Length: 391
Image 1 (cartoon, helix red, strand yellow):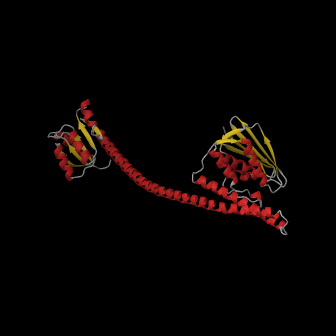
Image 2 (cartoon, helix red, strand yellow):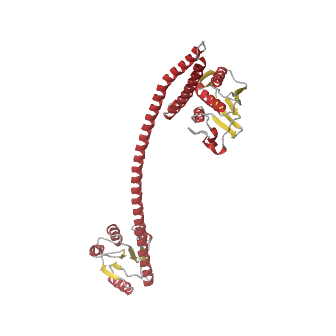
Image 3 (cartoon, rainbow, N blue to C red):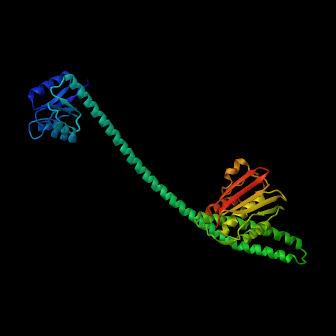
């Protein structure tokens, strides 16, 4: 057994002497013997002790229990109680001071040594645990402070990003609106040129040809700006669902007239209209964006003089639309990216496009609580199906 420095607190001199001899026989060093609590505290003030053997009943103002409470508070030294009493009242008082052990007199020296070893072991483990707990608390405190600082920096960065996004959205909206007016003027001038060319003019054919090119280029640019404006509003959280009563037949006619006017590759649109109500309540602008983009894409990626089938029906409060083409199709490996902004499949070749159409469709459907599905096979075509709740 390891050697310890021990303080004996015992008011019976014979018991104290017997205890001293027994402990010294096991190579322990007795730093002092005190018969009162006051003397015990004086000794501890002068010398360091590893453990205190404490009698409960002492002479003087401080009994063993009171003395132990002071030792626990000032020195944090393990205390082993020595007592001839084992009644419930005494034990209850003892437990409140968290003793390292309790030995009933007369004691067996072998058992006493075992109790001392266990008391020292218990004390060391408790202190190790306390040290680990303190270290953990310190680490938690430091980590909490670091997380707080990191959160402050993240908040600043997010605020900065929000300001930049707002500025970007304002710039996009302002610039796009600025382009709209001159484009409208250019388009009107191109149309006027075509009207003038209808008269007998020596350059009639050339004027018509170039005016047509100008008109198509302006329409393409105008569509791109419309798409940019759309996402500018979406990013600035300015997109709203504004349902109004609308005449469905007039809407479909306007939609098809506009789409057919832009056909350049001879594609024919076949329309299958089911039993549609005369009027519905929905957002006509968002509906137009959905079907116009789907039909324009179907025409654009169809073969020369091909066919596009547009079906529209009404079922249990839902407007069901289907756009089917027999064109180039979408590679399977790229179908998961189809609704991403600016995404264009690798097989589109020289067909012009911004890659914004389907992302606009997706956003509009989200605003209207609608959904979209599609099937596609390379070389065989693509079919889109949309379902939109209306009243």
